[in-house]
Structure formats: C-alpha cells, structure tokens
Length: 260
Image: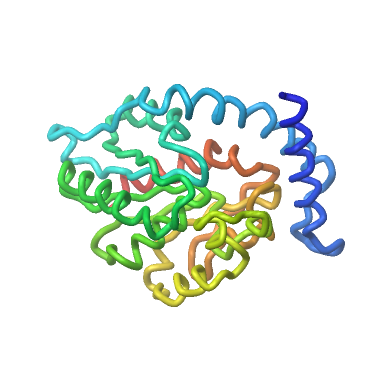
C-alpha cells in the first residue's frame, strides 16, 4: 500500500514537472521535485490515515469569554479532508491562548457554495466570543470556500485578513479527472471560478495573503494559487500538503493575530 501511494505521488510530481515550459523561471529542479516527493510521502499518510480519520476531534475549538481581548482564527480545510488536518496548529494555538474554530466541510463531494453556511457559522462564533473580526486560514479548496463565503455572506467588516495556502484560485489541471460538483468547479478557469473573480474588488484582494509553491503536486499550473492584488508568497520546494504546516505560514498567521 505504501509503495502504491509513493508511486501515485511520483506520477503527480511527474505531471507537475511536465506542466512547466522548459524555459520557465518557475520550473523546479529535479532535486527539488524529489525532495518534495519525499516530504509528501512521509507526511501525507500521517494526515490522511491518522489525523483525519481517527483524531479529527482530538483538539476542540477554543472559544472562551476570557479570550475576548484576542483576535480569533477560523480554519478551513481542503478537498476530502476534515478539521483534523489542522491538529498541529490547534495544539499550538491552544497553548498560546488564541481563540479558534476549525470546521469540517460537508458533504465531501458537494458544491463549494454549499460550504458557505458552515464558514459563516464559524465566523459568527469567533466574532461572538472575541468581539473582533477573525482571520480566516484556508488550505487548498478551503480557500475557494472562504471566497464563496466572502461573495455571498461576507464583507469588509466580517474579516480581518484571509490567508490561503495552496488554493486553486484559478483551478487546477488535476481537476480534469474530477466528476464531483466541487471537482468540476475547480477545473481550470471554470465558469464557477470566473463568477467568483467578478464578485471581488481590488480592496478585498489587498487583504489576502496567498501562499503558493512551484512544487505543488495538486494545484498546477502552480501560479494558479495566487491572486492579482493579493500578497502572494512563494514557498520553494514544498509540496501541497506540507505547505499547510510550513513554519513561514504559521509565523505569518501568528503575526496577523496580534496586528491591529
């Protein structure tokens, strides 16, 4: 099973490498691709075979009246994941007394629009507990769920900042093999994604930080994880799942929690 999984990841990285033009400045080296493949082989089984199926409720949400002076965070996971993805973050935030809610998006294969109510409920919970608009942190498809929430329920006063990590803002080549509602929406420049872009203003985009990587084995072309007008930050030689745990991302979110 482990060998089959490693081989499947190897195919993903081969497709990623083939997606770049030979003269592209973004094209990762063979060494970077191999390093990223190794990271994902070691990390992803722990996330998908342990944290999410067996430990999704191990770290409960932290909302307390005693934390009203601290800005809170809403965590939104990606495709075929649940709140267990964020366990390392949640443990650290509990230790630091940072309020948070981590959602589980259901149904797993539904339209991204169907997740808007879940995100909205989490935002309202953090708002009520802290008296402050939260930061939203989203990995992969979760970034689209947050943008859908922003278009339908959000507004400038509902959030402090939005951080997306490896989110297919312009879709991904891999989604061509998807037949689920959310899979179809994540196809490259799908009508659903184009409608989302038309609902966003430059002022809102300036309050996004988008982390992306040239070794993202799920979202490629990899620049599709960026947004025009956002603070786009590159994480070199880091694969898709590993980006969710990159120390640079954690440090930036921690900084935003304490920002005005």
